[in-house]
Image (cartoon, rainbow, N blue to C red; front, side):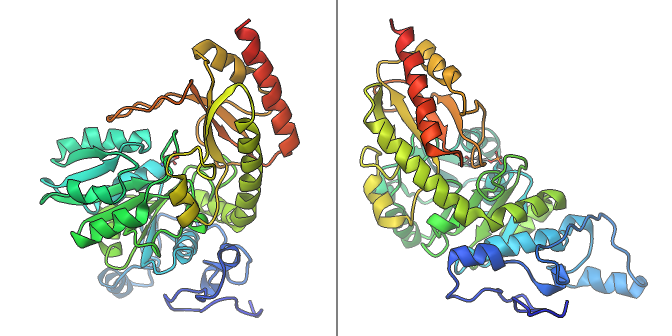
Length: 408
Ligand SMILES: *Cc1c(COP(=O)(O)O)cnc(C)c1O
């Protein structure tokens, strides 16, 4: 206390200014004095019960808007509010952000906040698998029909919009195969027909694609990935454009969503370094993707910043940069030779998720309603971590030796 305040105090206005750059905002955002009491990063508040002075106080609180007021643990505490506000400030023009116990919980709550029985959802065919499964399972049983669309459909989406079409879910680049969507064209077509747009923005984060500013209505992050950044927390968020937050919050409260304060506290620590981490992920991943493109064992590299990636022209036009996740195809490989390549890697771990400080490699075999193009061989997905890039290239190089050895 007593030091210079970094922020607006005691009101719900955004603490940053429109001029602060994203790298500044990840450092300053969400650090209101009344939540930090002068501690640099918002401290950990854990609670279920919050005690009132008397019955009149309890009754008055229950009647008032509980937003940013201590009420009951499920409505959150300053640890969660600080992280939600920080993520919200990264999305210029956003109305509010809600946090979830995982990225999948964020996707499903966002969809449920806009869809009703009888509605139709248009779902990008390259969506994250559990998103597709939710549409085919829960949403179908709930009375919502789903139609899949090609990630490269662009403005052609207008022809798919029917009387019952309520929402379009985008994910750009797509999971596993990284097709980049013509998002401005899809947003324009949706707005013309009053259709809601939801974007899974986990790959780019608001630092590389400011979704709300670009006209998306609900922007979803698996914070598990780059926001947390250290592979030790599951967390998700949805950031809403004006007009969409009240329904999102109401739906999420009804569903009982609350993100753990411990997880939010760790995520807030991760967020402070997200801008510098992303720069390094980008630089190392670009160097490795370009190197891979010159290797005889590689059929194609699916990295949005390379022209070989479908939709690269939209990436070049719309994104501020790339992150550390991409795939490539092993030329004429098969299951066994792909496994030999991955198993030979010393620095790349074999495991799900990504966005942490460490490098990962997994075999991926996309299954799509509309079919998967032939990439010239089986796919390997890499997450490029923060290790020395020369060490990583040397590791991949000896992986190719193991790949060649399986083929005599
Ligand atoms: C990982 C991921 C999710 C789900 O996040 P979890 O925190 O693992 O539930 C959603 N979308 C994308 C694109 C992801 O990569």
